[in-house]
Amino acid sequence: MNNTDKIKEKNLAYGGQALIEGILMRGQDRYAFTVKQPDGLFYKEKNDYLSLGKKIKFFGLPFIRGVAGLFENLYLGMKVLNKSAEIAFPEEFKSKKEKKKNSEFANKLSMFFILLISILFALLIFNALPYISANLFRVNQNDNPVSFNIIAGLIRMLFFFIYLILVSLTKDVKRLFGYHGAEHMTIHTYESKEELILENVKKKTRLHPRCGTSFIFIVFLITIIVFPFFNLFFNTQSWYTNLINYGKLGKITQIIIHIVSHILVGMPIVAGISYELLKLSQKLQKNFIVKIFIAPGLFFQLFTTRKPDDIMIKAGILSLKMVLGLEDDQIKRAADDNLTNKLNLINAVFILPVYFLINIL
Image (tube, rainbow, N blue to C red; front, side, top):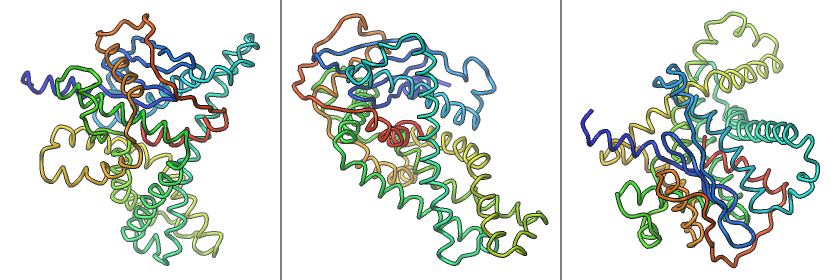
């Protein structure tokens, strides 16, 4: 690997996530986040971080690292998202602070259940429902597995598009998408080797090929290729084919078997392949064929990002500078923001599936 390749690989190691009124940035060995407080100042925090792939070599192997990174990002993202909500809207968490005896255990337990509900919700909407809906087209999943999964894949993309349109109409999600755009623009500035200042960042595009939204599109595409093999495998199993003798109950059982196998076995395989393709597409993004391949993912980002205000951009700059070691995380910085927002815990739970879809999945 020459020096140019090493620089590119180093740049690929930096990324970020939108938070509630803030931005998280991650590097090779640390992460940092900035959140706008109600008093108009920025809360800043930086922590050392060693990825699972570096701790255990197995989890850093190609096709394995994508799955390991997915769960790592889910955990870290949920942890920081919860803290950002507490910082941005302390009034919502005042009662929790007053009950400090069992707060740590209660926080972890509630975090686990909220994360579980969000994942299950996403899997239901973008895995189970498309597969069930595909049966309405009267294409037999056993006789025509390729055609069936193409239909299910197209329905999956349609559901995702409709879901994005609906959630983007809410005020809180619009703010989240604004921070998402600021995160992309800040990363673009760093990758362009320009100084991380407001004027430079504002010139950049809010679309980024290495975004979680692009990852989702690749996942949808790979499911169309991978999932038919599950049909072919089950068709060789007598216990599975014999289920058709039980009429509608047997057919429903076959559908359930496919959905469960897709979630437990198929999605990790798809995630591993999709992650490698996403990294490859970033390295070859000037290639004409690759540009066509990543174009749909960039199109989806028109809906998952919004033009950020200066405060959002400042949060992205501060977070990335902390990760790069260029910003003191102990100094409070004025946000100069007169905007006020109210976010209750119900709304926070509502936007979690959106958060995971655009930032992590």
